[in-house]
Image (tube, rainbow, N blue to C red; front, side, top):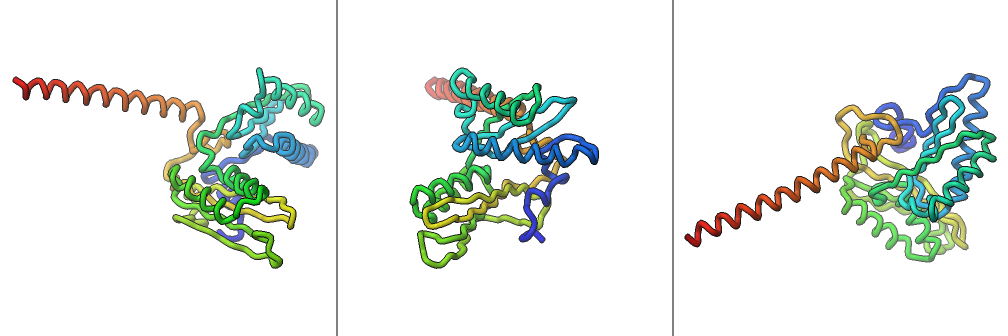
Length: 258
């Protein structure tokens, strides 16, 4: 089952949350679902080089809240916030709603995001970089950033060969059957002059033992705000340790001189 089911959909409600949060009756469910698909298709085409990982859509009392997870927030925001305002106006025309809110969350470690890794490999293949070199660079970056394992599979006319084939490169452990393992997955296409090349990426980020908040805007079980606060506290602790250690050595040195 782990080899056939999408790893993200397989873990919904267990350690992952839904990327569309809203309630609907039988009459308007299909319309909202189609509208979500249009919004995501439009934003991915509109911000083609924005490093978008996922788009979370929430609906509350006639208000449409769109959260874009990206590794390049500056491209989406634009100079003085002008670009994001234009995107908001375009989304109002697309959806026919007056109250549209756009939030942008920065992905701090894009090397551990499967969608960004797959998109990076696809862009390199389109620029005629050797596919093995591109994959090995992405694998090395992910493992260096703390991933427990990563698997990359490419299919198509690799290197412009006559016959299409499938190749897979894997390092570390990627247990697809274990539901408590946090596995990110992405599937993208590279559009080359000799045809489409499919790229699939699985990244294992470790085991989730405690109960996790299923809000998709929470990163790694923590919100972006709490994650930033923890990093700041760690920096302060390390700074205090260095100051304390330095003072102790100076006092010890003085004692030896006496």
